[in-house]
Image 1 (cartoon, rainbow, N blue to C red):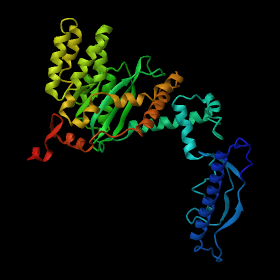
Image 2 (spheres, rainbow, N blue to C red):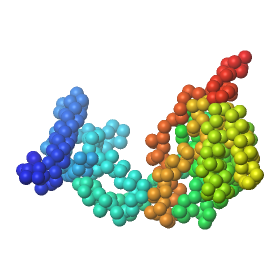
Image 3 (cartoon, one colour):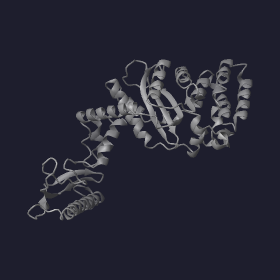
Length: 417
């Protein structure tokens, strides 16, 4: 029943609108439970026992209990069911179990999912009560035992990712990056090595993730060889920063894969070698290379950059010249995909959700627990990740179709002919 409203449109249990919502939720849940029980009894009415009596009948109500929902705590009295059925195989008594409100349920699944996500995204266990006390029934938070259980589950999920077979999944584009986080890993200067790819249907997916010392060639080669062992095919291009460890490993494991340097990392490396007054103009000149209409105009932009800065800053020009073949590699693929292939943004954006948690948790326990926490954050971000533009063109890239100025000029069937 609704309570009496005072002058401020509030009740002893909160605002009027909240109480109306909770009362509506309580009545709807009660009606749904009654309908579920009535439906079950009606379905089993034609299955009497040896004496011709019904095996499933109503039997009053259970004791009331509170269930935390998105509308707040709702008091529920679930109908009791007397189930006399016996399992023919085991000989054990069967029990009716509600699919809407299982016997163990004290929180709706959505509320149960929110608390681990809050922990992952930076809220420490001691902060749950003050942070959630305004939401009725939500201030309990996560106990240390619950966090331990969640961490164990996340470790199992991460292990399943690293062990899954890959022959049925074709990754046409691949991004690679090593991210340094302030959490405890196996080595003091270890980084989280991440491979993310684009499937033939255009969707982005985390391929593998592990830790490696200093992003070394051995660490990257170990990760790539493990992917090959599990059935991964060579991607068409791979996008990464200037770390030589990944490129050396890629040449050994996937020698046919083309290299595409991340423009953000390369731009930052060039600007670091310039005095601050020269950086804005140099940044615009480098952007002209990536934003060119096609590969020919990009080559002209490289020449213009060398002419403008070659005399005063030869080391910066050499950094651009050394990557002249790898900086504009994306021009040989569909124009709709250029925005995806120029940077390692898919990995960087995923790790933007990781850093708030790692700032709170300087030490995440063991190496496995640290990697599991990072994996779970990336997995939750993956649910919001959109597919590449023009996903139908990804399969053509895998088939070997040729693109000029971003447009398809040769179809796979024409190549076969």
